[in-house]
Image (cartoon, one colour):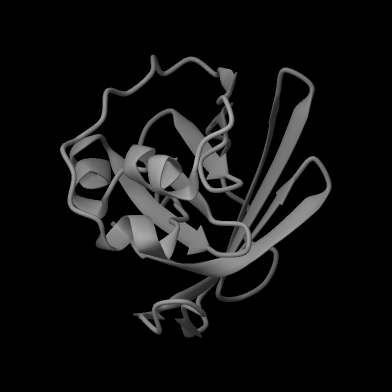
Length: 150
């Protein structure tokens, strides 16, 4: 089963040590206000994500966000340049149409829907090409970006 993950493009380019992961149970963490540079430094890079069990990552800009779909237990969304992070239980995916995968989850009064479409996408900021487009809806707010398997 393929999971999906979204990543903020600038964070994907950064080189940093792996970050400590939170326990697998669902948790919501609101981060204190950070500068863009501090927020980027907190966002895990692709190698750290793979080592932590991420299967798919999606990224987007304005505001910067990352969604990581783990192979076993959760989906983690980090948005607003790292100021907000929430973990959601990993649901079974649905396939609403050919070439798309959707995850819908909820925890602590928050709702999340992640839709991955196998359609080429180019990151607006870095110009990097990705094989999939990603749409994330967090509590009714829509974030659009690109993604790929980690």
